[in-house]
Length: 324
Image 1 (cartoon, one colour):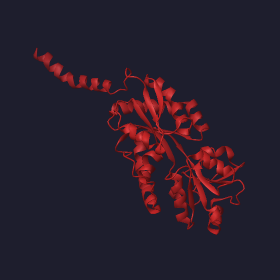
Image 2 (cartoon, rainbow, N blue to C red):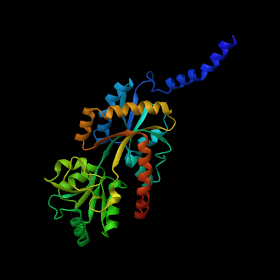
Image 3 (cartoon, rainbow, N blue to C red):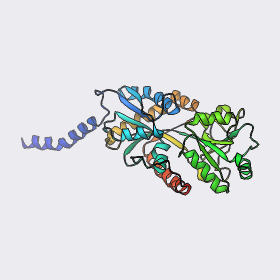
Image 4 (cartoon, helix red, strand yellow):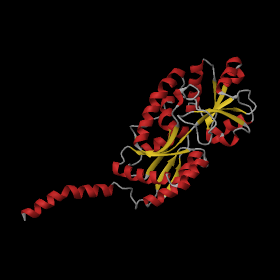
């Protein structure tokens, strides 16, 4: 009798551990997993989410639906997910802007990218380009900067949004080279693209996804950020190659869950996501979108957020920018 009781007590922690792991899985009896996207349907973030949603459904054994909660550069979606239960059924598609730049440029952000979320996995990275219209006299970054120093009409550069990373790439490039550059914020990459194609802008700093198809035809991509050249643009140098190592970090997208989510659930989501993003058809779809498939475990996003904050906090402060 005493032996039986001893064995029961000895096995109790293991039983509780197994039960805990089981309860920490994404539940299969409480409806669909919502993949929350802070940008409109049809945009690149939305297309990325829908590309992986079907595959995640197969891996996790639960329906996956894309939930677009649009506004404020994705911060409305992030704030919403922050307040949801940590049961694995609400997942955020997060970006560098949402998790880093928005916190530096506006006071209305009510979340902390590292404190209020647990990262699941990185999905992709993407390059920014320094681009001029095909009719511009500039064929290199140095030539564009020289034109800008000589005539203010060449000094303006379009960016997809106020307070976006491209705005501060331009600001820092100007500071490093003693060039007074003027950012022209738009509402999205599409109108920047149109004005570059039409020659209404002297230059633009914009994701290469919007530019690659026009390279050499209607625009000239002079440089990209990052530590190595973009696969889609092997002949275009990086800013680092040109002597500006400050621009070696790419923007990224990844999945996040509320901070209250159990680690076992995060690991389950991480494993499923990494498997999905490395599938050949998913990689091909991402490449066609102009983004670089860049699957990595969640802890890499924690490092990315910390490194990006360290890099861009002094630049934003020096610029004096505030969206409020």
